[in-house]
Amino acid sequence: MSHLVLRRSRQLAATTVVGAVAGVALVAVATPQAQAADTVVASPTLQWQVSQYFAEHLSTRTFSGGATEGAGGQVSFPNGEGTYDSRTGAAHVEYDGVVRGAFAFAGTTHYWVEVGEPAVSVDADGNGELSAVVSGWQAAGRGAAEQQTTPARVTVATFDAADGWAPDGGLGTLTATPDWEGVLATGSSEAAALGLPAGQPVEGRSFHPEFLSQVTQGARPLFYASGSANGDPKKPVSAFTAQAQAAPSVSVEQTSATPEGGVTLAVSGTGFRGETNPGDAGVYVGLAPAGGLPDVSDREAMDLFANVQWVNKGSIVDGAFSTQLVATIDKFDTTQAYSVYTWQAHTHSNTSQDTETPVEIPFEAITPVGAPELTYVGTHTSRHASTGWIGVDVTNVEDEAAWVEMTGFGARKTLNVRGGQALFKIPANAPKGTYQATFTLHTYEEGAVGDGTSLTKTFVVKAGQTAGTVAVTKAPTPRAKGTVDLAVRHLGNATLHAPRPSGRFTVKVYAESGPLRWQSAQLWMSNGARNGVELPALSSGRYLVHLTYHGSGTSLATTSSQWVTVR
Image (cartoon, rainbow, N blue to C red; front, side):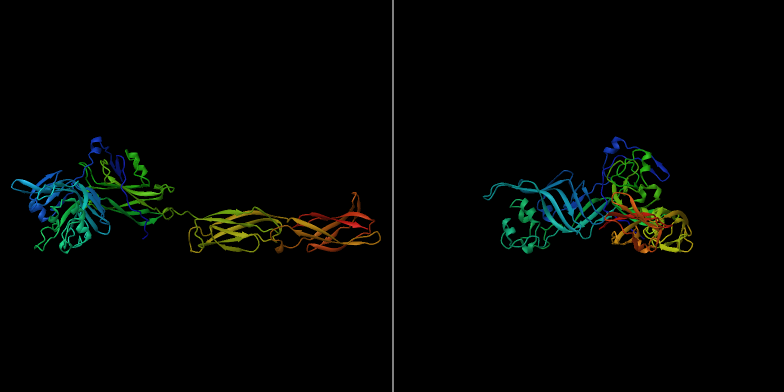
């Protein structure tokens, strides 16, 4: 099984959607009211007593912002906003509500502590933090002035969230115990700066130092261990319970990729809701070009997707679903990157279920492979004594999976297909003439498609180009003959591998003023040279010795000259 390269899903804003899925027409445009009603089905809450002392000693309590109190002083903070990642457990959720606990005696309030808008944060390693907006007040007395702190968000406690979030319908629930032991080092400078007596807090038992700094001096002893009282009534209550919506997350695995069946993607999701607003009916899962959820405001927009599947709300269990997308190569634009998208069905009444998960589509693996084809490549004409290349381009054949045979030009030759080609060198000694070369493909897999495919091409070998040289080895005089060496060679890129020119030639001698003074009889050369050709005795002067090579069946004619001075 091969796997797609996946990148982490991310939530994206998107426009109102119309759904149409795999043979089921689902057309329903969201009204402006439905679009604006982006509310969640269940409101996450935080259940937290703060501490036994907070509930029993600060017994005059008032609530605002939606906070309420249940049995045993448990405070419920509603309307949690934020999500948790069902894969890593990372989260940040903020809740509404404020509780003020006051100590009053004989009708007089002496101090109070206010805790509001708590937030639960967890990182991917399970390290948790409980924070809140905290302030405090105390009346003047015993020589001390009235005190009040400015409300500020501080860390109330840290905790270990290693057990993670437990799915519960559309919500996840986290239960954790705030840290108490060893939170603030006994007798430390930090403890002293908070006004704690020497030797306290006992065994480091304390709420977080930031929290202590936000309550007044008179109230601080309520939140750290100052003795060895049984049960530690000042510590944070043994556990709190936080609820959060799971952030929608999608994973995609390629389960098959063939030319016949296309690509099959197994898609699974967590943290999804089948119903966010009344009338919602699950989620859609679609495969389309990457870069943002397409505008599917009418049925034609479904043509933008390579495939779409509807997951009805009954198929979403504890926020999880699984489905399958299948698309053949004709459904893709192979110049595009692709993503798997999710969105709320049917009217896209909200964007909370929108995700985009980029995937890599193996276009080559799902492209049907055609029959091998041969296309002639190389020269159409060549010259004797000059090498060239002729052969075929081979399509739809993997390298080394087949070989090409060339016949009809010299001895039979074969080459393996490499780089989609089989190219043969034209021998430098190929005689002048017209040839018909046949190229035949042979596959190494017996009976494979394309075995025996052939192509015949006509090409021409022309006579080779030549150049001559004249070297006067003995200058003539008025009383004696001279001699000259003559040579003719081929011009080409493989002259060492071709026969040297042979055939007829003549030599003429011209006076410097132009008139012909002497002409040889018709002579012959072989192997490209003729040495010691006699020149006649000539009167004093300057002469041009001129060679004319008349060519042959494989070599073109050429001329060459050399000046000689006769004294």
